[in-house]
Image (cartoon, rainbow, N blue to C red; front, side):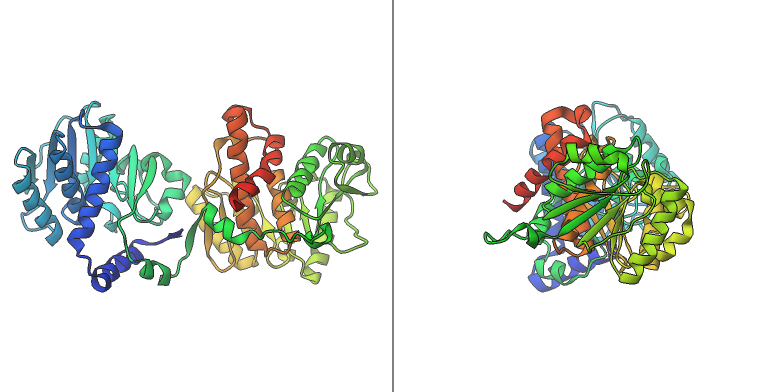
Length: 508
């Protein structure tokens, strides 16, 4: 699903109106009905509803929703901000007049000059229709005070399109206190990029899309920079297997992993790779990992490093379809040296790698290794690993913007892990994952993901496609594991076990 900017959405609105014969007022009424229906389904008409409507089309949406709610029997009070008396957009004015005529019982207070804030209590329901996604500059102090009062009320708040005070895309200087804290955000047609930034989660609340029938043709023609990954996307990507195929058709994956005390990381990555369908999986690790890996994952082969406890060199006697490095390898000098030498060799051979966990920590210790990253390698840092690699970031938004910069600069793919894992491509496009659960926040979860992505590359998927598919499948596997064990009880072993079932569900 494409994620558009406010300007792009306005262009799609305009195309829909001009090319498909749908009036702007009709689109407003579709939004209003969608908002009202959602509120009636969740809260019914028991609560007194207080509506704050701005002078633009977000206010028009709120007025239209007020009419539908009032016609259903709800007790509705509307504060319409028309400062100076001549600020209402044409659609907002029409919706105001329609509300007055159709629902004279509604207490409609048009604020032209002075505004006295009503007392808001937790037993009310508040509709935020002040500004929506059209906001492009900081709010004046008087409106900020209204937002403060809304947030202090403890009443449930429904924001139309986007919480007032929040920008659709980037919010680098945002003061969260000055943004409406929505219980539910009803986004019109598309989600906004700002919904997927962890910094904004407390103001967005739960979000849901209202489909109003904008032009499919315009949506298809409009290019995207940001994209929300859904099951339908992954179903289109993953290929069904030929009945006449053999394991030789699904590639050979090498996982360089493990050290003394962290051999379990190697086991988890190997299980992830096998469950994701690699034809052959081999572990390269220190001698101490040999019996652990061969016993825990008998389906995988093992190549012993000369060192007893750490990887000291990565010398391969054959070629592999994909190579993942990092789970549990530690950051000893001998391992850092081995990784540096191997990165130089892989870069010369133009073989993209999957680099995770301690591979990233090794590079952070010796940053010159960033210059040896093979083109289109996949780096899978969580926030802490990313900051160690590329410098401390003040916010999740700053971290994502930095990831876009470094992916382009080093020509690599960054899988920035989190609630909404972002797959950042070198061309600046960002794919945001929609699957997952807090149950994935468990030790070893990322090692499983490394194995999954490596296995998909081994099977012939391009690195960026493998990363996009891998994070979705991994997230869905976490959801399946949570269904069995609850959000507290999921372990990385459970996630690895569900990888195959997650792929099956997506493909079916």
